[in-house]
Length: 204
Image (spheres, rainbow, N blue to C red):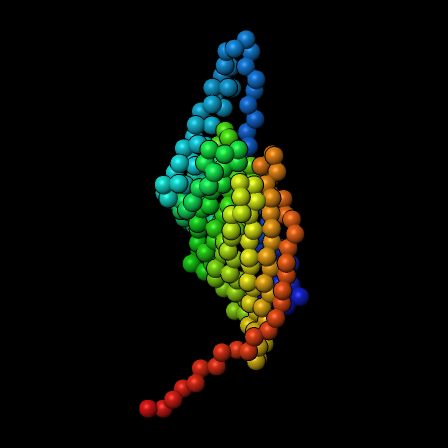
């Protein structure tokens, strides 16, 4: 059970940033590629194919996703399936991609940031819909504002009160720096209560 004072902390935990796999490439000597470079070139091709697969809305296993994006296995077990959703700025400096996943209780969307080689440089949970426990539910949506910026809006509802639901709405803005990292910017937080909906039964 999440108490009201823990809602913001819980939201931050659910939106924890994670760094993705970003292999370095070695410089060539005398214009010829070394074996390490050949392997790196193959990885880059695979990474770009991964973006194409997301754009084609294909499905992925946890292992396939984790080869490109270092996501936390605590929240994403091996049986969870992932599905490609949308790709933005495919030809830009930092292509953005969203993948979907769900475990039957909470459905999520992950935003992945890539560089021009196709390597993932950062990821963030930007979509969520479901019940956290018997008292709390969360709705999280995102909006792409530009090639290097986006925002999320989280609606966290606590239904533990007897007469009112306590709701916290958090709008968070993010930017993407030159290294492809996600940087949290300003946020707007608004809290209020709403009377519980009471169903009125009429006898026939």
